[in-house]
Image (cartoon, rainbow, N blue to C red):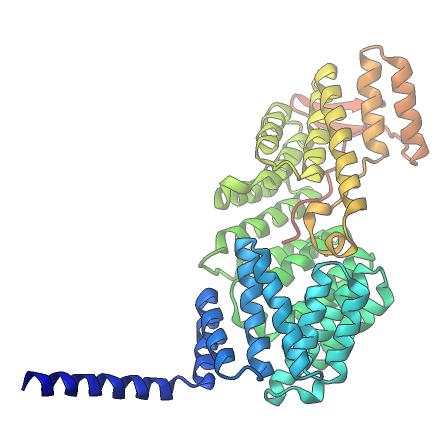
Length: 457
């Protein structure tokens, strides 16, 4: 009896295993991989795709499906072997299906990552030429084609072929104007880097109108923030202030909300300071700092500038010191701005030796910011605030000359003053509001608020 029962259990187990094996076809494993990838379970997704490949090794779709997951694992774990596996999967897909547009796009992306931009362009062109072989639905094909043109635009930009880059990204937004958020944003950033501000504003409006921006609270304020930055560069401060208020009025919550709101309040602070509304500006900076106290050096610098420009020099110096404690090492442009303002405030207090130390620190940080900008790739210059240069203007060299002259270093003062003159700076007689009341000076005019040089996001 026991023997028969054991045989029955074994048969049942074999039947279940057979049934499970029939369910887990290559297509089943492929679908499991897709579901796991959507949930961010990349390692498990790779396992599932590999099972699909084992069962059906001549299906190019399985190889292209595994690539993004291997790339994510390579990125998150800094594992070069995963990147190598990704390249092997792409090559295998193209061996099976030489006209596979997804594999060609992936190859282009990998070549771009290792700075082989000319080869990446050839791969992107192959993807575009073979778009009719795309096996997904028509809407997905449109998205894919637009995305490929965006990627091609990035490679062209890295090669400094700017006109062609803009033509490519224009093609991307024409193909999928409502869906390709990245293309609109990239176009806006490229136009900003070329100084074509009015056109960049239109691009950021296009980004704000996409389905992605409309449906994702985390993303929706970003193109508006970019618009605010551009309007500030154009001197359109009232419009910039309205844009930042628009972001604040969204009242969005969730992960990252405080940081986005802090950036909007900081933008308001800069705009209000430019409009001479210093009390409101200080309140805006305080709100920005409160929302993101651990990462607010740019807000502290903006607040410092506003305090300095209203003659509250002691408070300004303390705020500059706080900003300098918070700046990361690579934020040379922000450090240069803070040291510049700190030097001006110290000069106004007659502390010329300390002021000169601050000015020298500003020169050092500015040189490093310009060097980082010059050595950065074109795309990094276009989209990353860490590569913003901070060239010191004629006013800086004039103010430095004033501090040098006040302690009798006249030869150095003359050199600094000459540099200011070479840069077209002309001092004027103005009335400056100090802490003890109005003062008139012919030697050092009231310094305007520093330009916004913080993160664009």
